[in-house]
Image (cartoon, rainbow, N blue to C red; front, side):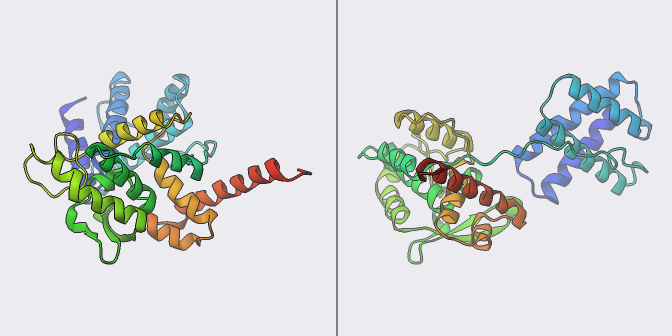
Length: 300
């Protein structure tokens, strides 16, 4: 990648960080996608950004299909590069965005996977105990299930963000947008117990800080750390599932809708900017109802 291309890329990354407030995780994908495209342009001897035409973009997409990349990966690449070239056009670096006419590939819609209530009970059961890490795991699991917050949001919770009088949590979401999310009595009790006992114990050998959830050394938990903990809980509960960070968030939304919550309320609790992001859970609940009907109706 030429020095000039690299400078434009770094300017775009700063734009994503400062103006768009994207997470480091999201920015890593943008960075990787754009670098891969620059490798392609180098192979094609395209030395200037204005040299890149729609035909070159179509050729690039053909190479991605030949590598048998998934539709979702190709769609992400297109989205990243379209945003990048839109930024360059805004900065008057280029006159035409070669990705503006590219259509996103239509992929098969995957319904969010979630835990059934019985499975959640099994997960809570393996957290029972007096050991500090078990008490922490119980509090973390209760809070994730009670609020539907993202794992990245969970790692950012500070003690001052919890209002125990109102049972409300201040959450800092994507783009530094803040929202208040209520939590129930089970999470309330588990978090209070964790703070009063386990957190103090785990913090003994660590520098003082106000992050709620900590690891065995007293340092703040990372999203990767939480995923590791959840995977261990799945193994202990002997559940035949592969867990991903969003699964408890999906479970929160699905269980609310299954029990009669309205879509707008769930949207606000999840912190979704658009209702369309929340509507996917209505498909999950419909599928759940269909399977229940087929399983239990005598003439199904």
